[in-house]
Length: 265
Image (cartoon, rainbow, N blue to C red; front, top):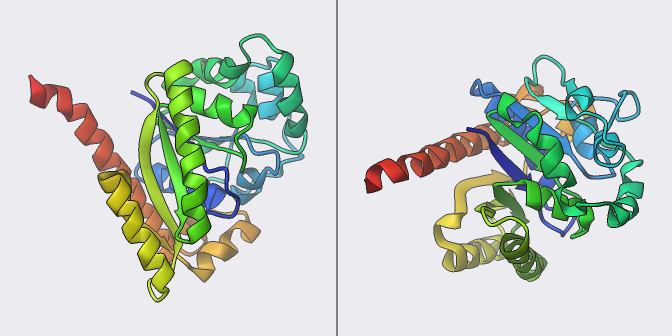
């Protein structure tokens, strides 16, 4: 059973792409089949995965707007990363406008992924830092949303808008959509504001907040410039250990959800 995660937050600089790439690699390290879909026109998830965003035959733009078969757009990341990728680059900026005039515009990504969904255990979608038609497509295609949050004041402000959007998508377009978890990123325990915001998140969202915390980590910040997830760049770093822990937590949560019907009966 495939689970599709949208990694989303309209606020930039909170660790969406870092989390998408490193969670994909960490899930792949547990021998899961993983596809990462980059739908951010900046294409940072593509380059951070070690793939040249201008040197692939097809990108997610071609899939969404030109109806190129999804399987033709899938590329392999370097062998030590272990996951597949659908790339993005600046061409995707045009898709934001083109989608507005297309039939079933909110469902283009969901329909595209339906062709290849059964090939994977997990599909991760790295969303752009805005609540535009690309993000709507991701949320409509997803089963669950992972929300990376930097523990600072403004992060809480933006969270309300995102939650409202997710609820609207759930009500109108995708009834099965739910919050998979809130992921605290770039966390510095020495900072009292980080601790305060973290406590507020737990107070408001309870067990929706992942126990795993992603720390501020130099090796984690360096890894994208080397075109590699941190678990291949420096597998012993705190960043690598944290994302492996997150993958384990997600797998345990998924297993618990699958066991619920059996427990109820």
